[in-house]
Length: 88
Image (cartoon, rainbow, N blue to C red; front, side):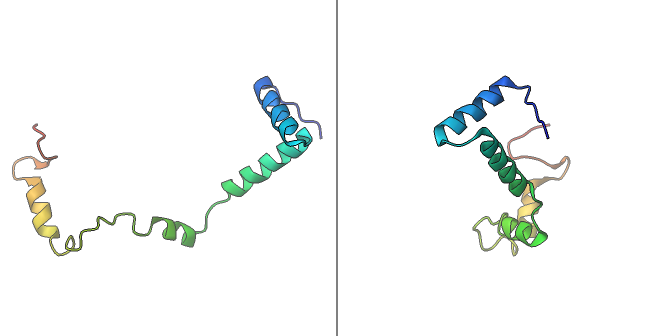
């Protein structure tokens, strides 16, 4: 397989890394491809759910109990939802 890299800056980067690490350019490229592929693997749904768990936590314990009160205080009777201090 013959692969040519047209981006000369990329070629120079590969050469610099290979020289710095005392490795062949092909080894640098191979490791980069392996790392990319490992990172690009789709996360299973369980990992995703664990990653987003507690994402919306505000630290306030009474939010669920006060939901109606909080929503009512944020809705303008004439204009609907409005950011505090915003005028239409």
